[in-house]
Length: 276
Image (tube, rainbow, N blue to C red; front, side, top):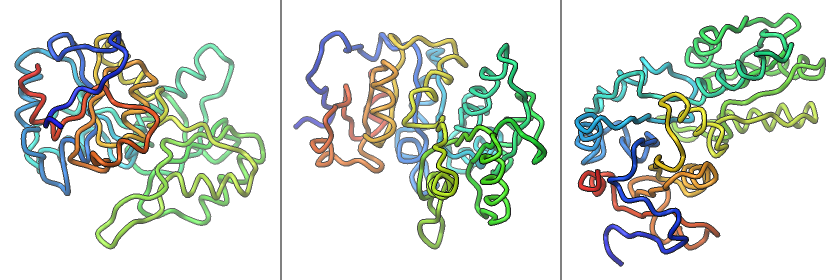
């Protein structure tokens, strides 16, 4: 099998690199790996800049603000402006803003999360409170509080709508996996009988909100990811050209276990530079 494969399928979905006007890309496993830039990532980003391509770096992590993430990427050797970063927290805030506008819904939210989520909600015009909120918004945090989870359960039972930024059950830490949004959401669901609406990947809603940010259209937008079960399926469902890179979670032997395929399979983002 060639190093850069195009997967057979419906010819209508094929779009060569030259025809793609906008790019969405996952961060961990695609651009960075263990806090180090993936070889070729810096050159790809520079190529996008040099050719005036619109692009966004996407992450399901709702802990950090785009400014925080831009600084972390810079420390890894990648220069990505904060306006080119789109998080599940930003997507959630945009979703809730759209829900409230013109609907008569209130703009009060009880949140479990960190600065990435609270800042996004503040900037979207929400009041953060535990007094009769319209929404309970669950995001990522390094220190989930039993008291905060209990409050969320009671507020949801009292009628607040349950929203989660992303479905990831675990997240990485220096000591190993730790519970993440999806695991805490399951706990709250068990206690309340209410399922959350989850905005982040693999919900294509996150991609659509990202495309709205850069005025992109699905016919001319590509998604680069390292996971078949989030990046690729969500990109496919959003109607995007999908590119799987093998520098993260999904490996070549794993692809066959899924009932869908990406449009391209590449060893890494380094293989994309000459296609743009």
